[in-house]
Amino acid sequence: MSSEAVTRIHIGGTAGTEPYDVLVGRQLLGELAGLIGDRAKRVAIVHPEALAETGDALRADLAEQGYEAVAIQVPNAEEAKTAEVAAYCWKALGQSGFTRTDVIVGVGGGATTDLAGFVAATWLRGVRWIAIPTTVLAMVDAAVGGKTGINTAEGKNLVGAFHPPAGVLCDLAALDSLPVNDYVSGLAEVIKAGFIADPVILDLIEADPQAARTPAGPHTAELIERSVRVKAEVVSSDLKESGLREILNYGHTLGHAIEKNERYKWRHGAAVSVGMHFAAELGRLAGRLDDATADRHRTILESVGLPLHYRYDQWPKLLETMKVDKKSRGDLLRFIVLDGLAKPTVLEGPDPAVLLAAYGEVGE
Ligand SMILES: NC(=O)c1ccc[n+]([C@@H]2O[C@H](COP(=O)([O-])OP(=O)(O)OC[C@H]3O[C@@H](n4cnc5c(N)ncnc54)[C@H](O)[C@@H]3O)[C@@H](O)[C@H]2O)c1
Ligand SMILES: O=C(O)C(=O)C[C@@H](O)[C@H](O)[C@H](O)COP(=O)(O)O
Ligand SMILES: [Zn+2]
Picture 1 (cartoon, protein in one colour):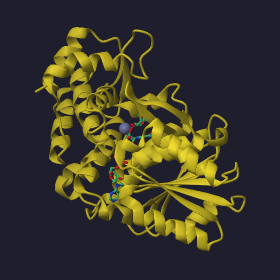
Picture 2: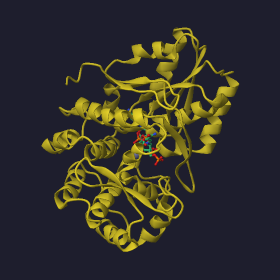
Picture 3: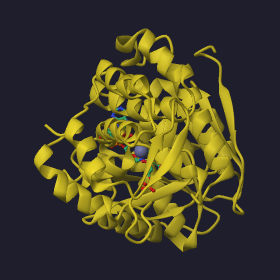
Picture 4: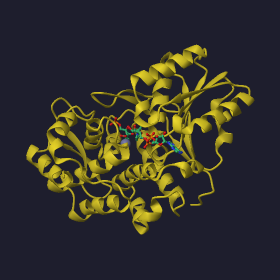
């Protein structure tokens, strides 16, 4: 797979939604006007503070092409995923006379694309939107699949909608300006895709974990493409998470509880890394997962610099939060665990003693 070629990954339309493509490559902005289409008069570019220049350059470019283009700057990271910031975006759309044929473009990391997609889902009960993800995590996961949303004080992504984009442009050049911690955070979702479906991803990272930490690594494009393909296959058959899609939540039950406990100051990928370590120990202690695959979680996550541990004394609070995870049904706690490499399954109502023992491996 060449890092210079443009790869097109198709996402099938399900549940009455339109199909779309995820493009991975470089210099993809020429594709944007075609995705916006000629029915749109106005385009709103939602971007984080960190990408102020990119947002303004896009606005100027689209204005030159004849659109009424407005840039909406939102805070960096999770601070953008709030009801207040969504209301700020609605106000900007209202003031620019945004109609049902107009288009929102979300440019940024997963927090920005989650917000932009949510604003698109809710404005006039749904307008088209396009994702231009600029982090590893947003390229491989957040911008693909149509889950959009915001956080509340009570939990992660508690308010949202399934609203797929009209297209996703993953321009690898964007990754050059990403701080290393944010780059590595995205590797958690890449590694997740490896454990649940595509172990070649794990082999590529293990071959040179240091190289995997930078966009200049030899396998960057392949790691991103393979991870997108895993997500594409799942969301093409189960957009609304009625079954199969739950496997994409591997490591997220504890991960989301940690994010809430840290008031959303931790990066999502870091929390998911600890969550995958926990899920591996849970799988092992529940008699599902072999020791070698469970141990492999520790070694690969640690090798790229992702965290494995969290505060032991926080367990009671984390457990309370996990009880209202979106996968829970009534009082039944449900976790994604592995029956083996690339064999994800659901573990329902685990024995509380097993849960505590698994956390015993994670807590410090
Ligand atoms: N919708 C989904 O299916 C889905 C899937 C996975 C994760 N998510 C969500 O994605 C979010 C995490 O996304 P993330 O890891 O991309 O973090 P992020 O969006 O918080 O971005 C991390 C930081 O990098 C900055 N940034 C983004 N692109 C940059 C670039 N190219 N150069 C320099 N700085 C840049 C951002 O402004 C931010 O400060 C979480 O809210 C998570 O819940 C959603
Ligand atoms: O796309 C999905 O489905 C996922 O679960 C992917 C996750 O990586 C992502 O963090 C997602 O936002 C979690 O969804 P949630 O429904 O648990 O909030
Ligand atoms: Zn995630």
